[in-house]
Image (tube, rainbow, N blue to C red; front, side):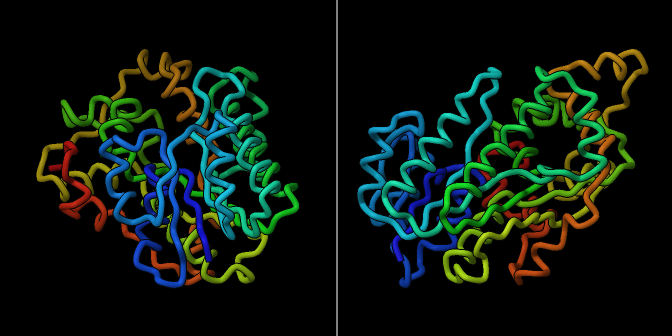
Length: 309
């Protein structure tokens, strides 16, 4: 079976590459924006061929899809400008998959998309311009493109990535005080548990779907690994690094002001939603072995090049 990993260098796609690179039953092809980047180097060793291009460029997608694939995996980074770039890219991918006869479309989405009552109650209080609302609404819209494509599909829905706390480009945006001051500043109730996952576990599920397409046909799977409070996250960071990581103690006025902050505001709402009680059922149901959060944090390979080292 020929498999194309479009989003091959991120958390999710790299997990698929790792899972399939030594699988002699499948030919793995990958796609990256820059063949000369450091993140693309492992792809050259793992792939039959690496394509270079951009999801917004129909020509580069056409070149890749013309190779002919049985299965295609993709995920889309959100358009942080509030535009429709992410939706346009998804449409380009789905159209190319349909046009070239792809048999199985695999999409890495996000947990909590859909119609859960508490989720919808919170979303209904947000302005349409709110980042959190736009993020989930557009993720759901892309899921709907996949569902309505007419192709067999699998949608994997991960919650918080542990990589967000470590990878330099992620942590700089989401937890900038963590690598420099060892302060975990997160605008959620520190005693409200949220699901966490190794983002590359999405790739494990995608690989399982490639190997057993009928079992995963038209399935939507949420894959939370551990339900952890912020206090527990801080303790795991301390244990993994040996550093004096502290939970930020929010002054009352700053806590109130954070409710309208670009990053922290959505976290308030996320905390209000609570956790999905079924968020950890995916691994049990499909027999995919998840990576425990402490295991990921303490792995020297994951620490390399990050503040964890």
